[in-house]
Image (cartoon, rainbow, N blue to C red):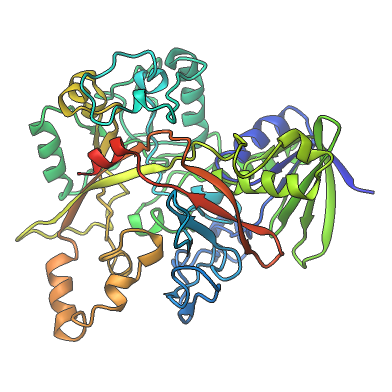
Length: 504
């Protein structure tokens, strides 16, 4: 007989943990199933030693070689990540709309660990603007190139609520999570301004970014970062004695200063005398499929830490295991339970709405090395300054964009020698090591000259936006199987012509 809970949540990251936090405190019996392990901070450990070792992105083992027959990058070398699946065991398959030359990729995974992607994120925590939530009804820039509004395969819609409705939830979430920064200068309305924790002093190299943002007509503000700089009462975290970028960005934070969902939501709930009795977290448990009972999903089938098959029941089942993997799980479940779940999902690879309109963050920017200037960038967090200039209608009209984005400087970019090596010449996660590992000029004196020229001298700015929501971009199941004999996710995605214009 299966165990029974009020709510079963699949995934412990930014999607699942807030739900668990609220429901456990409301007295509901909640189970979180997390595919990855639990990694302790120093304060979680009896001997004060954290499980985070600064090698979360890639471990220090030998290179591996892709051995999946038929993929375009078969035989390519890769490094295995300790918080993401091994590419030979469970890849994501990626191709354009023509579905030709599919390749295996780690892209689309965030982190499989208690806390999910919030354990490794840079913690930049920007609100949407009022216009972001009302793109369909807001004033529309004229003469857009490859106008996405006129594309029948594009769906641009207003959110079902406006910014004024969402703002109190932003306010509450920011207080619960723990964020430092400033609200003055942002293109968003704050009912309770200046509730962020006080940010640290800016790094000297950030002055160049501040001057540049000001010169183009922007109003810079301190970037909201989900890293505490003061005592945080909701989570019971004391004031940090010091915070450096090597402990909070791109790696798991052993100190617990970065406001991931474990330290800010789950741990405080487990420590609460009442709510803690209602919440259980099971790490190292991979959900294989779901089954239904009439109109509702009832059973969650998973494998425990030793690979044993288990089943739990939930009055409510929440699927929150990332955009790609959540869709994949529903599709796999439809194939496993054709009569029950399959009829409800009505999944098929050509006509189903499930998996359509897949879009990702568009990150871009620019980077320079500043001559005759060097900064100790470990003495900072991920970003010092940001501007909302490119979210204003005037700027969108000038640049012929359908939507805008915030721009912020990456103060901590390549702040440590290991991150400089890992990101040099890389365009995505799949080739993070390539620029360093295969550039034979970076040996001996060449290595010293490279460090002299680039280490502590680089300044970058980034923007964070989203792709045009295009029906042709979708998630489906591939013919390639993972180590549990389940079909892997296939990401079918190209750039919309308007996105292509912006990339130029």
